[in-house]
Image (cartoon, rainbow, N blue to C red; front, side, top):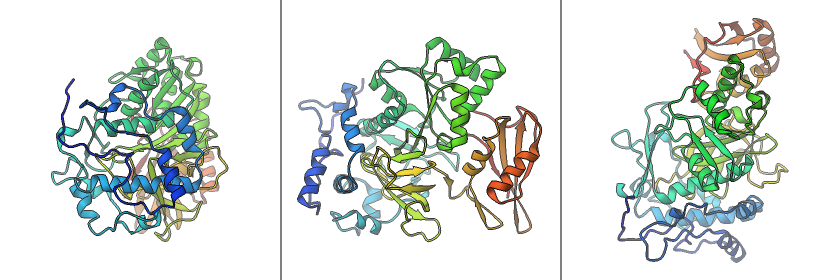
Length: 474
């Protein structure tokens, strides 16, 4: 094992800020009581996470989920001021970007005075390595890249402390999925440089699960390994979970009786789309849990047990919601773009990051968890939203409608433009070969006339990654 020695200790993400927070005494005490110490082990150059255990235990996670709104805000403000104090002397990107900011912030309302961070500016001078790295390269121990779905991949690094912060965030997801020590979890992804389920893998091993990697395997081999390993959980994208069930049916394998109890899905909105959830839960005889995260941001969301949507992990992220109509702070339930600030990833922080994800947020939602709930999860991206004859159409809305037809195996949405008119066409693999009924339902639910045509079964693209169901040919 390679060990690094550092001449200077850097304050950890749980440390108190150097200046007064401006919080009332009661709020300061509340935030301080919640803090999880992250100080290095005395007399050792190894960080404390090498003990191989989660740093936030289940009781503490439940306590954080039950905080009042005032307690969450107090906690976020203290963590944010600590982050800024800790990284700004070392992080050139944010030192320049936040040069004019008065610190410490006295309330979270002042966060709105800070500039946004956009993905385009995170691409470093060489166009590859992220520009927001805080420490010298030898401090980092993990390398990952964005998926490159929307442009060239960007490389990001994590320290051992930051990696453990990822894993602690994933523990909330594993809790939501009902996963316990002794479960056997199959990771159906490629194990390449894309972050994928790498953090899920390590978080699950910390929990005491047996984790089964399947990089490089084909779908049939993975299905066989689910059976032979006795896997009780499968981690993949919603599209790939659907594809595995389809391949199982083709080979006379009953996926609902393979023993899988939990599907943990990420990478696409499907885990919070009711029709997709229902189809997958029938096909697998398993419970679906949604998760949301991003390579450049972290593991920011976990599924509501009732399937209503995603909770934002508000003790590790500050979420803002910008109205799609006005660009101002959105009201509860209003269509908005999600903006995130990470609070524990000091080696690659993001402050007011414009995710481009479109959501409907509810702070008062009546759930057991007090974190803000995103109804229906991520509804789409603002660059995926199509405006057709004045109607805003989201890919997730189309998926909800099409997946309500069990005979439709797969589909693709094609957007074209004829003169000034944007046209929407849907291709379906339909066992009944009756596209008119799908077109009628799209017309009824969206208020638009949509051309629907059938294509041969198995002709549309499949894969283990994000589904390729949306094709813009304008």
